[in-house]
Each structure stands twice: as structure tokens, then as C-alpha cells.
Length: 389
Image (cartoon, one colour):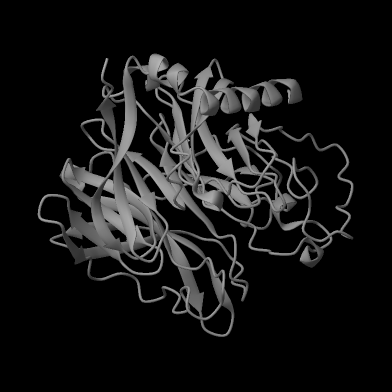
């Protein structure tokens, strides 16, 4: 596995050094950026209502609807009142805020959406909360909790908050383990404790009920848990064609990963990591009889990977079914060519215009977009540029 990863890194270097190779691979087309919307307060996620209208979550702001033609932004009314009130203002590095937004597959008929955010509970702290709601004329109604990732704690980090819908029309939710330092772990680490909802990926039916075929993790396990050993997963996406779900994972000192989701899998945190632990003296307990699932890919430097997307559009034919992963650290954007669950080649795009980025998304017509994680956040279209022959 390590040899494959090192070879992938070599391909990155080669693609960066030889621009002609990239042009040839794209069939004479290079990508370029076009800013199509500005003024978003650290945008986290986007859900297209149509080709020119979308819901956007602002991590440090609101759930909003944007119009790409009129260049307008409208606040969605009726957001839950338990949204934490310390977003980005009190604690430096505070990860609190509004996270994913996702449309129900039958949104046109039922107007149902899903979203996640950091919820507060007076006297106890905050946690990740997932809800469903109906959207009518820029207002929310019938708000129903799906998962409240108890316990509430005063810690301001690693909420997770990612969501996707699988090929079986079940809903997958990611919850971070919430700790900053490993030496704060209890005797059984949070992400390894199946009686604790944190540090897990959960699975629900779209109506909020728990599927009968979720993995059996023991008599006292939380029944919605689908996989464990998660530090902080934000990006999670369904791969077209294969019906597999891929997700990104934040490490501490390096250790950023890409994984394929498997029922009942244990992804190892904090006992196994491709990076280093932040608490140098912390020794994870030995867990007898536990098998860990290794990542499909990991970086040897910090990327802080976020909301990934599989591209299925037609504007870049040679990018068909490639995986795109943005990064917060260094503002990187990565393209992965995948064959049979194996990453065959990797390219870092836009080396001359890096920007801290939170999400890659595709519009209904197959256009590729990028959300920048800045106070004056942008929605950027990645479009083809013809190369003179």
C-alpha cells in the first residue's frame, strides 16, 4: 500500500512539472476559475435547487438561498434556536457553526431538506445535531431532530457534520470525536466506544428511523452507528456506478485520509493513524480482538480534506468519474483518478491560485463548483478553457 501511495505522490510532482502532459490528458482543455458569487460568510455546503439557485450553509452565518443570475442572497427563516451563539467570535479556531445541507431525493414533491449544525444546551455545552425540515418560501417548518450526538461538551472542535444519501436511499451522518488533545481521552477512547455517538458514522432511513440491517456492534451499542474509529470526517459522498461511499478524514499532525465506508468497519482512531498524535505522551490502550480498516489514501503533509465530490459532467470528458477533494490547509484542490477502488493517479490543481476551500459540488447540468472558506466566501465555477493550437 505504501508503495502505491508514494507512486501516487510521484505522479503529482510529474503533473505539476509538465503542463503539456496535463493539457494532453484533458484533450486540449485546461480548467480555469470563475467567481460566480461572493459575500458568503465561510460557506460550508451547497445544495442546488436548480441550475441557478441553491441553498448554502454559512458556517459563521445563516442558511441562505442564493440566486446566481440576480446575485442575491436570502436568509432562510425559522432556523432552530439552539444554534450555538459562539460561532467563530469567542474561540480562535472554533469549529462551531452550520454544516451540511442536503435535499431529499423527492424534494420537488415533499420540500424536505436535511441539515446539520452545532447545537447548544445551557450549562452543558455543544454538540453536533442533524435535523430534517420542510422548506416553503424561504422558511423552515416541521423541524424534526434525526440525531443529537450526546453528550454535550464545552469543547469547540471536530463536530463532523457531513451527510450523504446512499444508493439504498439511506442517510449517512458523520460525527467527530470532539477532542483536541488525545490525553483527554477516557480509558476507552471516544471513537472506539460504541455506547458513545461521537467519533462515528451513523445510518438512518430518510424518515429518521434506524435500518434493521445496520451492523450489530453489541447489546449496548447505539443502533444508528454504522462505522467507528472516526476522528473528524466532514466530507462524505456516494460514488456513481459503484454505489460505494467515500469519505475524508482529518488527522492531527499529518494523518489526513480518504476511506471507503464499510458496514461495521473500525477506522482506528486514535489507536491507528497515518500521522502523529498531538499529545506526544499519550499511549492508546491495546484493544484485544479489534481489526482496523486502513485508508485508501493518505497524504504525507497536512491537507485538512473536506467536502469531496465525484464528477460526472461532460465539460471535462477526461475527468469523468474522478474524485475531487478540497483542502483547508494550503488551499489545495485534488483530483483522483480511480479504478476498481484503487487510486491510480493524483493531481493537485490550481497551484498558482490556492484558496482555503470547504466543498466541491456539481450542479444539475454537470458544472463543477468550489466553495471557499473565507469571511467573504466565494462560489467558484471550475470551467474549461480552450487552449490555442
